Length: 455
Image 1 (cartoon, helix red, strand yellow):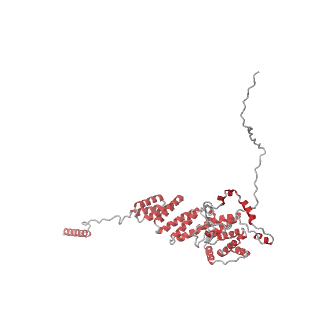
Image 2 (tube, helix red, strand yellow):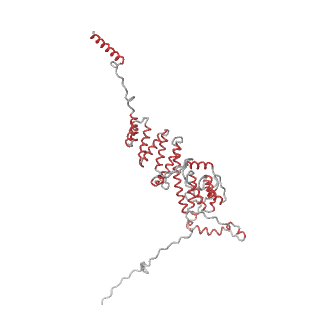
Image 3 (cartoon, helix red, strand yellow):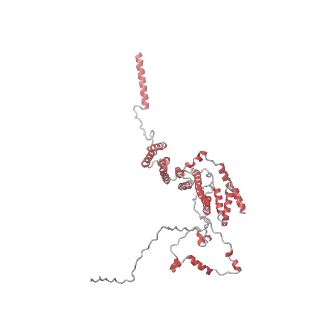
């Protein structure tokens, strides 16, 4: 009986197992095929890109560029193609050095050319500006990198004005222009110190007009006014304008009270300070962060300029500094005519070139015109052109008025003629004898001589 029950339970268990296996399909149904690309593995271009990113983070830049170049050359329709190009540029940027930064700039420019509408294009342009910003020299040295950085930051603000990198480019541009203005001011101060007042005033004028946010603009105005005051009475108006600009546009500077005193002595109007200028200078004063003692003491070891005094507000200049004509240079009469009338309508700085000589010139009709000294002809013509004036009429002529002051010169000399020193004669030197050549008096044929007769 016991054996029969055990056999029955075994059969029931086997039947239940058979039903379960049949329902699950584990014996009679084939296993489903799984695509390895769909689930467990990734796309090959994504694998290459992730590997290159890890290599860049660990400093293996050359290996990362090899993986990225394989991705770019093999999968030309990949969604990671643009990111791979940007990663190549970033690898060069992280590697650094003059060679690496030059290659990074070329790659960033290439990325902007191919993908100008992507968000990363503004980032690439910001990196180009940063490349030249990092290579800037001090204010008294070469300004090539500073000018390139200024140009690239302006390009970012012009091409991508609404990007998140625009405020950063604004601040970089203020710092770059602070360094450029400092360099121009150092040159102008050098001219002012040596007494070349026209050159100094012209340099200071360029700094003030081009870089109004410069932290030393008030100092430049004060030295410009001092240069104009030393150039004679003809520049009294420009001197007063410089003092008035200090009071109006830089009301919180240390030169305001001395400028007001100078204006009172010159009997000129003292303007009211500009409220916008007051608010801007107050904001700069409150947000100024002074450099630490360690940074100031080791500044001579660094390569870049000191831009701690750069402005933190205001719109930077979007034009390039152009050379101007000094105020001491006389303006031709033709240039003073109104626009559209006369030969000076084009402007005082325009230069015209004429090829050849006019047909009615004296150089064609009189071949000896080049040999005639201009002073001699002018002196001979002067008495004939001036009528004789005598009596009270002579006192009323313009010649009796005071002569105008001469224009200031950059060369500061004492006005005395320079004496030339003759070379000293060597007393021990012997005179050189000139060879004497005997010339015959007449060209007569030589007579033959007869020998003496024998005795």
